[in-house]
Amino acid sequence: MQAEEFRLFLSRFAKLNGKELDDEQQHAICMQFEGVTGEGDGVITEQEFVDHFISEMMNTSDFDFHVTVKFFYAGTMNYY
Image 1 (cartoon, rainbow, N blue to C red):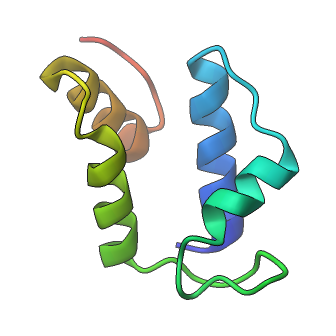
Image 2: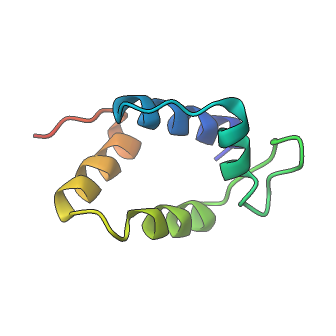
């Protein structure tokens, strides 16, 4: 996944959860990935994304985890 694509996901997901992420916050999150340059460009590997996602979701309920996975898979936050 391109870093830009990941930032778009972050932004959409935050808005769906009633939060706003500014460019600096998105950049800081993206910089955690090895393939992202100092300018915020680059590639996030599937393994890096999955590892990050699982570590961020460790303390959520199974239901919230499922809804979040569906968001990344289908682009929606349907609860059904």
